[in-house]
Length: 310
Image (tube, rainbow, N blue to C red; front, side, top):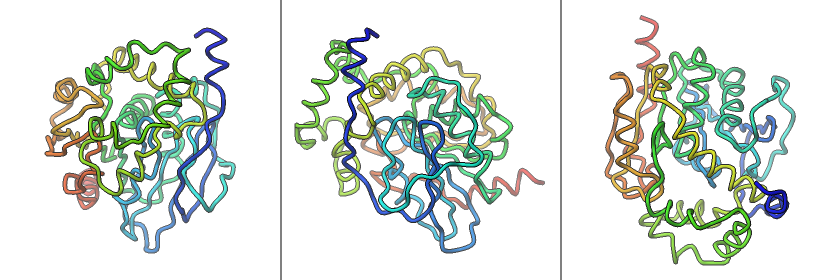
C-alpha cells in the first residue's frame, strides 16, 4: 500500500453508535473484551465475535437469559460500542504479534478471552460472518481451548469461500486512494437506498445496527485491511481447520448478498459429521437478526458437555 494512500486512510472515524452496557470492558491489544453482568448464577457462557463493520451488540438480544454469561469481543481498531463502563487493563493480557486488523490478530484476542474469562464449563463460541473466520482461526491456533466448546458459525467467512459476485463487482474498481471518497459517499447516503439489496428485509434491530456501518472502525485503513485479509484468509486456509471442531453448527442463510452462499455451503460440507449444517430460511446474511428461530438452544451446550464427560 503506497504511503500517500495509507496517510489518507488513517484519518480517525468518529464513533456514531453506542448502547447502554452493564458490565466490565477490558482492553486487549488493539481490541477489547466486554463481560455483561448477569443477574442469576451463570449456567452457560457465550462468547460472541462480530462480523465486518459490525459491533458486539449484534449478539446482545440473542442471549438475554439471566443465567447466561455473555462475553463479547470488539475486534482490533473497532470502536467499543458501550456507554457506561470505561475500558480497563486486563491483568491477563499478553502481547499479540500478528498484524492488527487481521483475522489472525483478532483470533489472538479471542483465545486470551477464552483462556481467562469463562466461569462455566458450558461454553458456546458464536461467530458471525468475518467473526466466524476469527473463531476458526482461534481454534487453529489453540485447539485445546475448544475441545468441548459448542461452535456456531453464522453466515460465516469460511475456508475456500468467496464474496458474493455483487460485492466483488463493487470492490474491484476501488483503489486504495478511492476509499476515503467511497466511505464518505456511503455514509452520506441513506441506508434505505441500498440496504434492501444487501441486508434483506429490514426490522427495527437491523436498522439500529446496520445504519452507519462505515463508522464501526476507528479508521479507514482497518476497513481496507479487513477486506483484503478476508479474501486472502479464505484463499489460503484449508479445510483442515474444521478437524478440531468437536461440536458445532453452521447456519446458512437462504439468501446471502454479502458472501457466496454456494461456496459457503460447499466449504461447510468438508467439516466432520459431528458438526451440523442447518440451511435456514433466513432472507439475508444476518440470520439471527432476521429471526432467532434458527439459533440452537443453549440447552444443547449443556447436553454436549454432559456427553463429553461420560
